[in-house]
Length: 187
Image 1 (cartoon, rainbow, N blue to C red):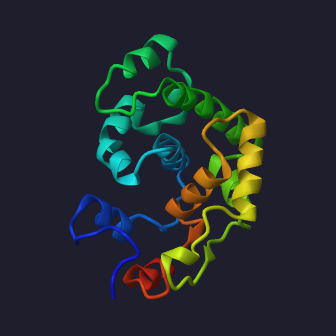
Image 2 (image 1 turned 135 degrees about the vertical axis):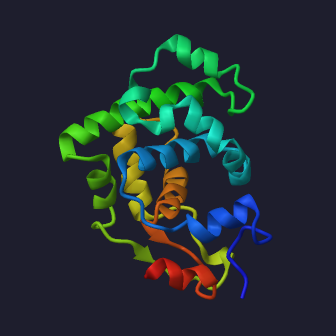
């Protein structure tokens, strides 16, 4: 049996597939990290983002939502010079804006986690696709969450980005039915 994606065992992408993708995440800062990285990925490959992940963690205080929300324009402009990041002004500045919205969500719902996971009734949606061609790029739930986050003022949270985010953080388990990781992620 082969994994859904990821290439050779031991590669960065394979390790992401085997040990992270589809595993439920409930830590607010970690959720914010994945939302930020999914938004940064727009128009690029996920492998590109994975290679830059450590630089993003360093640049954005390990995705501490409060610290990112407090970043100044000067700090964000300086990040645009960092060759280890995706140097897109809109994406970099949206990280701070999204952190501010995440703080508001924490105040309203007790945590970012509570709000996000409410869109799947606080449990993973498990799909049993036979091929990658069957896996959707968005769902009713990703569209609803996208609409909610946009209404609150977030950027880079379209329904396709949100569906990829939901897959990444385990809100949706889209490992193919025959993937060796499918059973592991269901335990």
